[in-house]
Image (cartoon, rainbow, N blue to C red; front, side, top):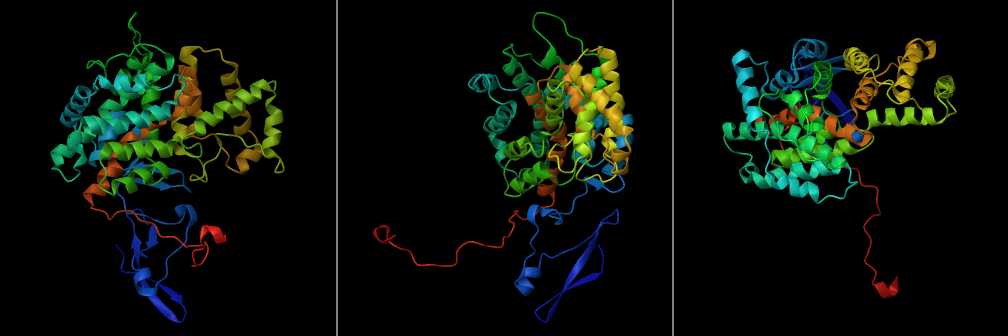
Length: 429
């Protein structure tokens, strides 16, 4: 923490506000006492320039294209670790040693089974109900099967068990939702499989035949989950954190994060990529026409999956996942005109001076949409996969709220409605 002071002057008075400096050199003004001293609050629509908390989990430098989890670069983690190591890192603060990792994997594997009544909940949904609606509901329902989790002030061992259960059961819930949308019988987890392999087995396996996930597919999905595992104080993470600040249990807090992620402005970007490519295909597949439309400032069309609101140079996650996307397409040998259009669009954009000058490079959503389509997932399921990857980050952020005993979130507002006025009886209105 810094000893520096920022001065805010208003109406002839000056107020001293401490400057806070983070471990990566980020600075911010702590205005938590501003209203008490001056009566003023700050106004920041969308909280784009407001730090709601200090956090030791994830660091982003959008200008430099940096994404670190607990100090480790996303590039190193995606190349050298697997998703279970990264989940342990985010939730517990350090990478596990060999013994800790083995114990962690066994615990998570042990808790992958869910109560049989979850089937009844899923069966009650309409046949065409959205997978994210199902996911939020069944996660919230977990709190009714583990009522002890409602007490968030329990000892650490009990809280650790809740977090392990949430992580473990997510693969089963997601795969069962997929099976439900397909009208197929549910598959049960196998303790012989790892986290990602088990998810693929339960999702694409059938009771009538043996299914062995392809190592190339396992690696690609594992990397995608790592790349999505946390992304600082985004909309869904902030939702988890503010709900958790009320002492809400982990399951309901995660369900709130699912609801936030469901919004198309947050979790729907990779789906939007495929929808765009589908529209280009329906138009005849002439890619140059759409490139020209994207360059035309008077045209409302925008290329989905290019550039990023946080990363102003390049998305570090896209560099990692591009190779995995190429590997999946090569290994599976899929003939899909939409994916062919994706490859054509990628090459045109990467070699076009207009996009290069504006740093409009393909982002992680572009490549993740390609991979998910190649694997056979329907578009409406893409956001469920996003939630599966983001879960360790949500858990870590919820844990941080509880560990730091942060105050309940309660943003202020500037009221712009009618001034006080007398009530008029209905006969006189």
